[in-house]
Length: 317
Image 1: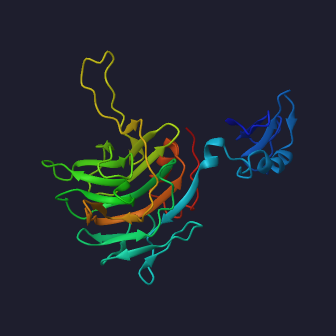
Image 2 (image 1 turned 135 degrees about the horizontal axis):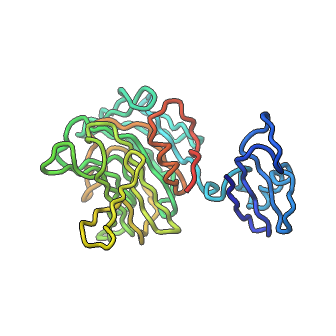
């Protein structure tokens, strides 16, 4: 498989997942291989390409990285394996620890060994700053499990602005079916009272009392917001011709967002000026990324594997 990308120098950079160069193969050659095909069809050796990449791509290209991934970066990851002096560490290079509030604690988890445990009354966790620009492309994900059937909405995470939240990832229970309901992300288009809110919902998941992987992707160039549950989009479409039932999908186009200027809140949201919707249960392996992750990358995050390195998962569109 090859992915060709342009760095604006009139040549294509090709990432080759085929061992060897020009048809030769060797067991001791690492993958992926990086080569360059020039406009006249000739090839430039990989070591030359690697030396030129930082200059050609403005100093931000990593050799062997597809163009789509060049704007992706881990902004924060909290594994909730330990807490010290009321904080739990950030596993990313940003070292942005979360502070535990109320009686929040570290308890049994789903990924690795432990998770954040919240009582649904006044427990929460927060970072003073949101480590992503929510007006640009971003991705957030976490594992979540409710301790009991909630009586009302509960928030998994939110990012504060001055007057509302730049995003709120929450669960809204069904009034009739126990353990059922919908997950949704709420995205106001401005940091003003009365701003227009876009809600992207997903209703295909396990009982909320089971562990579910929740992920939200905002793709700024496309102005598209997507919600994934357990690695999957909800993808019901109309029949062709559309004469029968048309089901919902878990993405919305035409979405505008604004940059959060406040704190990253885990397990609560600000509603009408007060803290509310406290999460009752456990939260594990919380990630924030700069950039919009692909379907394949979200599916990789939704695998409950231990020992996963803190890096952007490999994947393609």
